[in-house]
Image 1 (tube, rainbow, N blue to C red):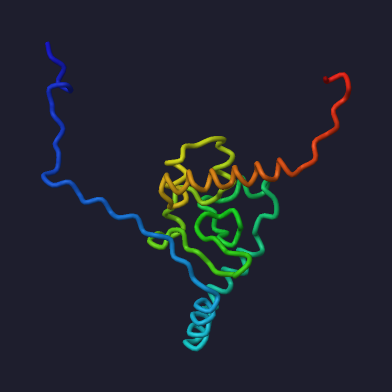
Image 2: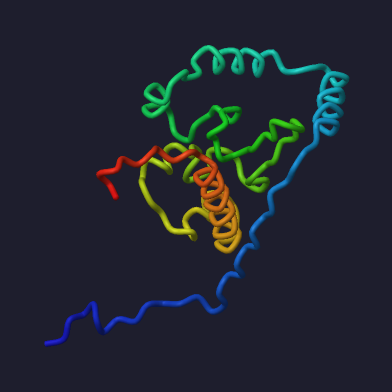
Length: 165
């Protein structure tokens, strides 16, 4: 007697959906952000309800990793340096939107510390999380490792005892 599950073939759509191209990250300069702020102020300023919400977020912002680890996910604190939604260049102040086609709540991962706590993921997974290609993640990994080697080579080595020889 044949199993009915095995004799049934899956129904496939006539035409597969075209893959949505990956949206590239978008960087905004300080001048561009200042222009947007001036336009918003000229149009009537910030909505008081939004201002109250921002004040509440600032008051409840976690101060340590222990407070943050049990916090809401996706993490609403995009100004945190560990948040994956935006990157702020400390030298220029420019803001890079890593996922310009998505809203914060649409991301599977929003905190780099949560990813680090998982202890080891593939280059492909890092690429999806950071909106980069696997090859670019590999390049950045190699660059970081070479910088660590230079730092390790520059540090003085402890003196070896005569017994070690």
